[in-house]
Length: 350
Image (cartoon, rainbow, N blue to C red; front, side, top):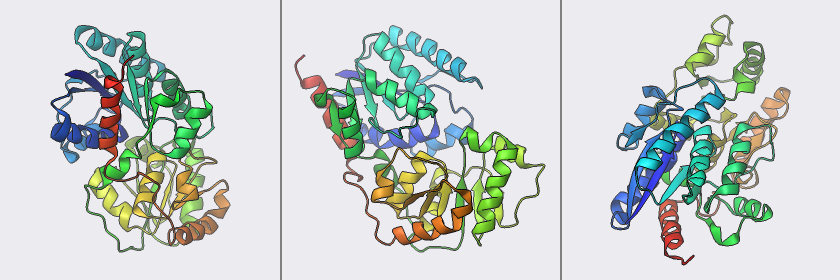
């Protein structure tokens, strides 16, 4: 029996580990003992607790409660808390997800304590080293023992970085399996969805307000904007366009229902780009680059480099959705491929 610690820190982490956890419960409990640790990067009920309920996940076995508004303090607290857990319990490996700060901290901690590190969503690259997520995933992949890649492009990225090919396993995008459990609406309604969370877009009202005005001014329909309370506070002093409907963050099932039925989504999120492609929803990404190139080449995604061209990009994204395809292995068997890769890792000599 191998003991594996899965470390999460944010809502997207929960969405991604849910299929892995449930596959373990139904198929692999005779071979593996799984424990969950939550760093506390997202710590209130709306940001974390409701997601456990939505995905029928248990309360984590370990909660580090590393609350901090300072990035390095957050990482340091996670390192310190995880070291105590890993030293006082016998684990055979640590599994991390994605590219958040908790993932970076857990990865460094595991390797420093000489534990194998498994990275789910390995090899994803935007090429933009100024992004925290890009910095994190490059470090994590450089020190991982097993790289669970979501796409062939991610696999190729790892090959280019001289990662040992035997450690790279193409498993597919785990989000596709997460979405398979939800009721999806196929009839499009007239509204759009807007999500913004990156600091360069939302932290300064003087930057955010023109973005919102530009989007709302070029899209002649209601735009639902589930906004973080901090963002709502930053906008309270401004008169916003009448078709921009600000609301609190939505429960994940409700958000996915709206995402599957809206005319289009406008976002700066990496995860929503992939969800939109899976759901065949037109997607406008307010960024100069993307780590999910398949959403551009095969899916429904269009990058928006110039806010004055929102209307043009909207039409392009809608047209793309009529002949988009879901990338290879983005299906409901991703978690099974992950567990088989982990099986092989422990069964391979040396």
